[in-house]
Length: 124
Image (cartoon, rainbow, N blue to C red; front, side):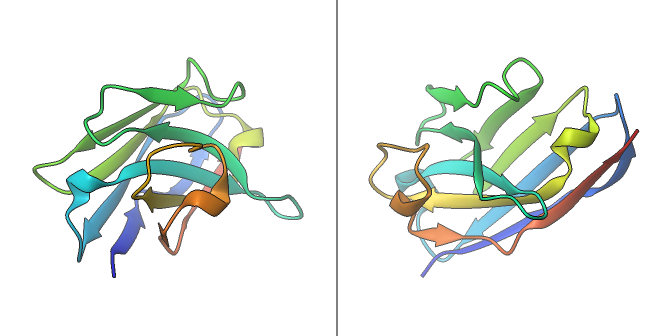
């Protein structure tokens, strides 16, 4: 069993930045591709970004491309999401997820483990 714990969420103003972290334990972090998803009230879960096991390949949704950066530190078993130029549409609960397979990372059903989420609220 892998445990994923997100942190770093909060209330910020439009244009501000936040960095989310996701600490992994219980399984070798380096074996897993990782993803960030988010869910706003009344909306479905939405893919945000993903990264392969080595950090050499990343993918972003169109809505965050150029503003968000996903990264990982395998020595620390930690995933990050740097979020810049935040706007109210980014308000959501953000979840990290781990996938042993490493493909189709935009699809939530491929992921094996999920964190509990961290709230990000962006005021206008």
